[in-house]
Image (cartoon, rainbow, N blue to C red; front, side):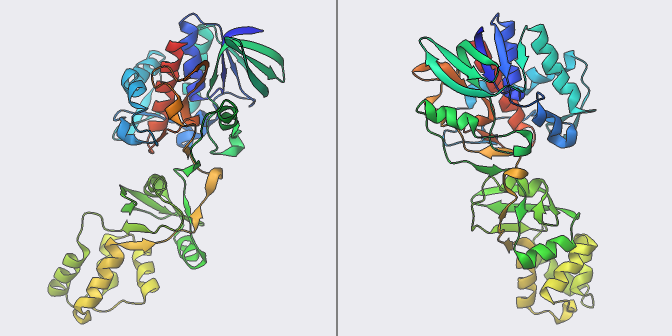
Length: 391
């Protein structure tokens, strides 16, 4: 079997690259070891897939080479992808500013990609393992569970290590190393935090409670809801800040973002001196959280009896709650992989390996990781199109 292009990975980036190259007249084969294409598309966003963010820009991505993503993102923008899905009649909703989700099911989005691949003449081979890849003159040769395949170019769109139950593996990194490329350190990102025994028990007692916070760590800051779980802390705020967090770091959590707790407490002591701290907290926080804070700190005095130092302690707990996670939930629940194939050896225009143009890498396998909110899908579409047009 000979193809102009063989793409390994039938996910967002791989399918986008395939249909783009197919429409450009290339004979394209997509291979995936999974039994179904686009598994991560189907499960993302609670099954409704946050497929792009209208505000996507280079500043929404983490990479050791922050300039690498600029070219592809400029050439294929969110409105281009929106135009594609609207042509197919996909209804979508903007759940938060810029964040577009399927109004129905992510199955509709995957169906659009597969339909476009079919129209572009793309062949897709699922349940197919790649056993070996080697350079063959000006092309590449693959040994697979379905036999030998020769290709003019091979595109690695195999994703990262997140959610191994969907088939994630280090395959793409192994291929990169085989051909002499560096792989930057990888770790789970957009992932919930776990807590130590005492705090785990406290969080478990509040499981299911969500509250808007501002969270800071290593120069990163997000204002989003935080969710208590049976294992620790989750919700958009925690998933976002996990991309900054390193083991041993404390999170600086502001339970009253935008409010100066010391000023408000001092004012309350003057205006409502007979009120208890718990009553004041109950107006600003969910009742269960307010009660828990009082129980944790054993400090529910009448405001009039609170010294300046006591109010300062409460203000610090509220505006700068220092909490040190024991870790994260790891690859099992991480939405993406931080780190990946070092982009210094990759062309930002064509995604080919410098000095080996018949090998290319796109999507999550690269050291480009987006924030929460549709950015990673937009990177998949943009890198897929840029590579597909250059094949």
